[in-house]
Image (tube, rainbow, N blue to C red):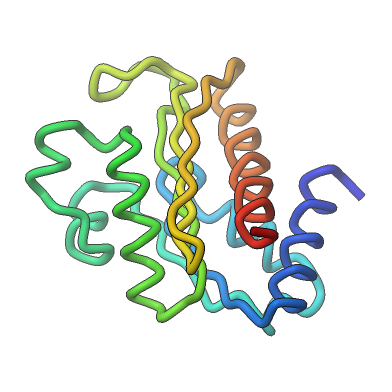
Length: 159
């Protein structure tokens, strides 16, 4: 079992233990967080679903991210990650919403360097937001983001 799989299993186990539901909103990971959680037997007890919001129009129209915020700060920002996690939580009526946004490369985006990532978890405990600077190729950055998202979600579930 890989580290990411073990963390995903711990997330599912903890969510089941506390009776919490989870929803995901993913940009650069494009469903990898949901897929990791869904790969755990019994995930259907807590994983409600997810939104892949790769384009700003989807972030705004589906997740309710303010278009003015996206215009002002771009898509790679802690406020955008927060709005995405809150938006998917509300959209799917979940206890916890986890969101990813960042730059996987190969070039910078919205003035942010490759490897810049923001992850947010919205839940009954409030918000947990983390910024990361990952190095490596596109696939490595996306993989590291997925693992970091699961770890942050687990930390928040345990609060």
